[in-house]
Length: 343
Image (cartoon, rainbow, N blue to C red; front, side, top):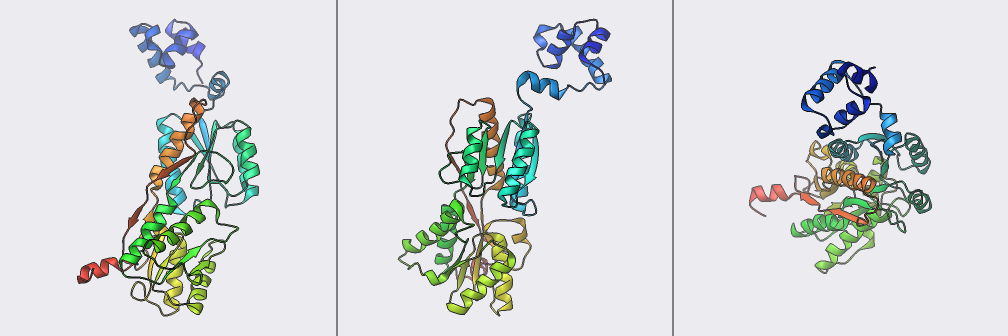
């Protein structure tokens, strides 16, 4: 691989002049010399030494991204947006999956720090002591799609409270009064789950509907079998005509369980999910869902982190919320009613 000194010898200039040109400081070298240097660099496929540059600048121009599970399209969409935004700023992205495991978070963070990433984007799990220590280490850190109580780290996520209210208000507008809801267990819930449950309850109270505890079912860790069991538990103890699921995969599993139980969606039970995953558009009936604006979340998170890296003196807001939007498809019954002229 050709070096700066070798390019300089071929161009008849110093290595410093070559460095100026390749760094974009073209005003310091004449036009003819500049073109000669660039032509030699292109011909020999010159590649700058990233390690040397990192030693000089104290940056590797790379960020680490730790998300829960890339098999879920929600996280894949966020990652894609992060990569696009980071590339525009000249940063490389190194990624890892945590599967909501604290041990995996610690391991992945350790590996990424060994790679000398300039900062981290993390979808956090509820371990405040660990994240407080990570913050105190001085490494720029931004949370994605969640926060940790008691740890003031900038977070970019959807307005989950508003999203839940949009979904439940829509079901109320369709005439439903017995609206069931899925909620994460206390071990899994965190601020995101709390906000979605609070939004569900607030939407009911807005129209003086009672918050009936028998209509709320915890779904454990969110595995398909948990959600199917949750539907059967609801059917066994109470009557309901609509379901607000806390995420799309839970909604899809619930629709399967309702079919097994002899309930039609949306004729017997209307269903709305949360996240607007690609999977929801492929089930039948297609799933109505709250769009969290994953592309915006990824773009804003990457931009916020890189700004923190390059301007550490700045203090961004802790809460950075995207505005969700309800995407109406067939599972809630609204389209069918609209087509028949009854809504």
